[in-house]
Length: 278
Ligand code: ADP
Image (cartoon, rainbow, N blue to C red; front, side):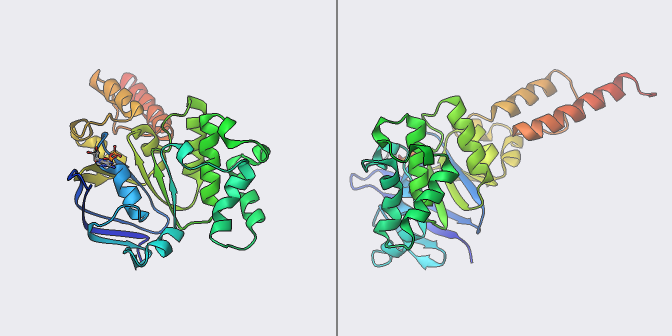
């Protein structure tokens, strides 16, 4: 069974704004899928709709096989953890530990303290347990919000612009944290560098789906990402420039690890080209 299955989804706001049109999408168990698109593409709407906060809609949304409707919204929500774009919308208890424990307590899960501690440790927020969340830096607040979600142990994480507003160090730490986490994820973002690092697959959304594939596949289709108002990953841009000036780049890497390997291969090919008999 798919972790998430969306069929022919269409949704308009009360004022008539069409936010999603004829979107079909499926996510396998353990898969990380990034929804990328420019501002206003419907990314946030999609995540909030899956989490049961946007009704009515046309089409089908199934979470772990359970169809989302008014009567099932609470059960569906228990299987999901939604990270809001702005942690101030999510973090509200007087202390970090109370905030992280709020979700599991509200869901009446067992071992609330144990769950909260585990989630705080995994996000590096345990040392902040007694602090007031609203006094923390933006990056730390985001971590607390993530801890609060993990404490509920949801099957699927819905992450709305997880890297937005973070300083470079916090952003890099969050990317490596999400990359290392084994859990099904749907990530809405316009940060293609982050998407390239974290996601197995991407869907370009602009109210309707535009294309889908791995980052490598999308980058190889000239103009596709740019045409959708997106910037290709910086590292891919660099290698395209290297190729354009005549070096033998065989394929354009989209992550730093891939770039390091391709750089080494390019240097070796260039050496052989310069000294063919060695
Ligand atoms: P994204 O997350 O990709 O930036 P959104 O899902 O926020 O896109 O927005 C999709 C469309 O829905 C946009 O045209 C936006 O203006 C509109 N929209 C978002 N929220 C509301 C709302 N509460 N009421 C009316 N229109 C909205």
